[in-house]
Length: 257
Image 1 (cartoon, rainbow, N blue to C red):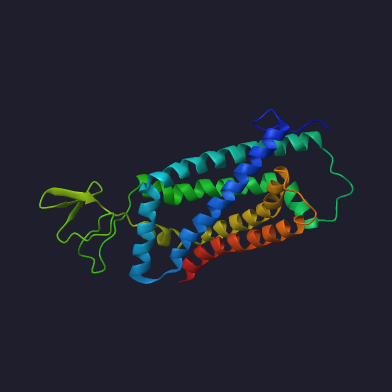
Image 2: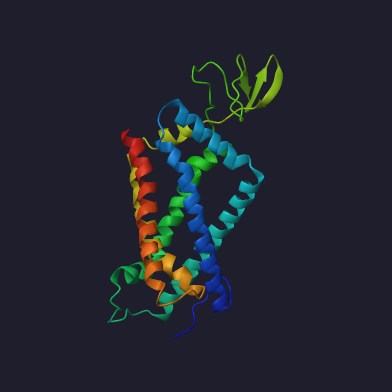
């Protein structure tokens, strides 16, 4: 059988980078979920807290640098994964008549290309619906609870302030950048049942992707020991169920509530 090759010529180096990017993206998912849990908070306090979180994520220099690393990791992981999947299919055009008994892992490993494609489409849709609109689209701005004063990015309400070109002006003087209302964008987006259904489908695909990818990443890095493999598999299964399930619950909750 010919050796599968991705973006990197060395099979070993390619496996390491796939594992590193995969584990990095798992850490990103964990942090992203922690931030998105604020969407379960109701009322004005929840709206304000989520928008303050959005400001922090888009203005903090360290977080912005980390976001660029995340984008590169997603692109590398996706392209290399697709190329590996194509190479494997070409090298093995006829399915084996016998499979090992680990049915769940075998199914997910054999369909990593399909699952990864669904996830990649989800990322594009997600970025277009929320990140692009927040950064470049027509975005509403956050007001105080009474609705009569715009907020600056630090949460300060400017009584009598007017918003022009994303900044707050008071008596003709620019007093700071206005806080965008990402919370309202998310709430409005999840009134669409098609979008909610697609998000749930994508999270199911992510779960199956993680079932194989979590333990596979540790094996690729050489962290493979009979004593610890069962623990890694159990943690991987738990993560692959809990994290995508909570991600899927957010749009469902917002749609019905």
